[in-house]
Image (tube, rainbow, N blue to C red):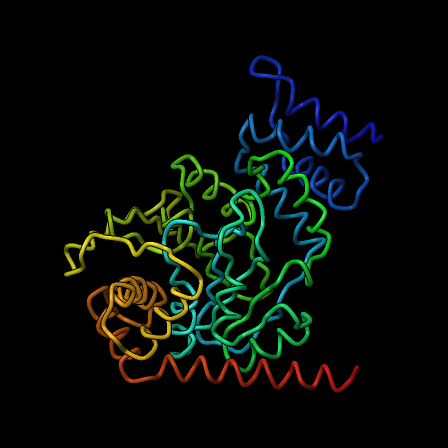
Length: 356
């Protein structure tokens, strides 16, 4: 048993009247002790649920990120005229709405905007459809690549995927706790603003509950992150909704967030999200989008592609971004980027197999 960790547990687990939040250094220490196995299983389980009930602060999230920086992997800087967009998408996947982020990543990379994504397999508590399965269905298997090989793919194609089960195995032990507790601990919130890229980055994170926005702002500002976008997205992802006005927060030079409200109706889109069916059905829908075929998912792709083309600075406004996204999809440029990615990943995977 760790006496130090017990003291940290007592601070967050003492209830409304006597409980305290951790400072940044304490939060980093607690995170490292959990991941390195210096705390006992009983202490770790108690801490995760106590911290969940208390709710984290922005300073605590910053400390957790400090620990991830010390223990975890990072893709190294590549040559880019723009900050790399790092998308923080819930690791436990989607269950209700069709995800569009793989198409968004391909679209951005096709015009020279590099993208980094991170995540794992089907994970608690939702065990929803993860990004890895979508990419595999499209012909891109990120799960076999070492971090070094992923770096090569990233440098060549502008798309990188930090696959935590392989690239950050220390996190694997925590998933069992998350499953047994049945609730997402604050670590799952922190993951959304983790930036596993060592260069100039634009952090993009989704969220569900409004208080999370403020926590993210504090954590990112404490960490010196000056370029970020926070999206109240579909199932907590970075995908803009179509069934309601999109609520988006943008980093600005002032201490206050710049709030943006985007109504799909104002840009000619129907106000409905595409439901998630089977994985096979989703993959067919994505292939149709890449082929330039008109569909509801294509409308979602244009809505999101237009926003991120504008937010990256490639397009001057939303309308020109939407028009550019449509041009890129209809011309086959985005589909060609997928084929390039498949070829590079397969080539590196074959080289790896020939060496073993």
